[in-house]
Structures are given as C-alpha cells and as structure tokens.
Amino acid sequence: MARRLTRSYRGAEKISTIPIEIPANAAGQLTVMVTDGRQLNQIEARELRRSLQPQSVAQMIKVLNQTHRNNRLYVRLLTGTPGAVVNGEALPSLPPSVLAVLEGDRSGGNFAPIRSAALGEWELPMDSAVAGTRVLTIDLDGRR
Image 1 (spheres, rainbow, N blue to C red):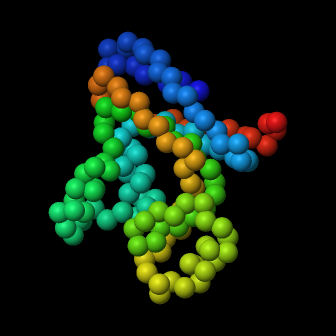
Image 2 (image 1 turned 90 degrees about the horizontal axis):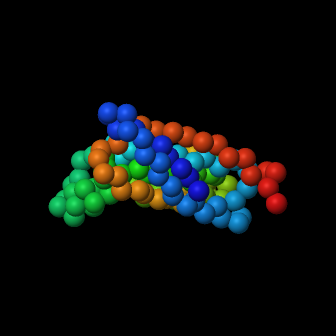
C-alpha cells in the first residue's frame, strides 16, 4: 500500500491510499515514485527522448492522450533494469545481449538507453491540482 499525505493551499490534510502489487519475481532495490502530472511529463520527455513536434494529426492526438493531468497523483514502481528507446518506442527490461546489439549497431535507427523499467503504474484522481514528487527506495533482498 502506498499512502500519500496531501495538503491544500490552506493546510487541510488528506491521506490517500493506493494498493501496490509487487511482482513475485522482483528482486533487489525497487523505487516507488509518487508524482504530479507535470513532473511525470518532464521525466518521460527526458527519459524517453520524446519529440514534442508531432508530424501528423494522429501523432498529435496520441501525444495529447498520453499527457498526464495535473489533478492526479501518479505512482510508479520502478526497477533498475536497463532498457532502450528505439525509434521513439520504449523497450524496458531488455536482456544484456539485446542491449549489446543495440549499442553496437547505432546505424539501425534512433537509439537511447534508459536506466529503469516500470513494474507497475497507478493513478489517483484528486479534487484539485497537485504538485510535488516523492521517491521511496525498497530493498527486497531480505524478503522471503
């Protein structure tokens, strides 16, 4: 369970709870990130190297539909497994052999490495706009 305390501009507090399911095969360190839509849009633009210049109406609609809203809390469960963005599409949790091939052949298209993969994503609608980010690291090495 992820619990998030939010405060309004007048100081009223609200606790929100989101159940988070950790996959059985997850190991090592995981990161729980709770953030607002604006910050998540910036993170995705930086990590995924997304172009903000759509070339067609269909691409523009896709970008608008994927834009995160400012009246929601977004929760992501992340692992440190590397991946890549190839021609604008994220390919998280790639095996090392695939990453080696992609890194060795840079002529095959637009390639950029990414540092983490999402194991789960959740969103929680709020009554008003929210702003802020919190990150929590969980170590699963000692669990049974």
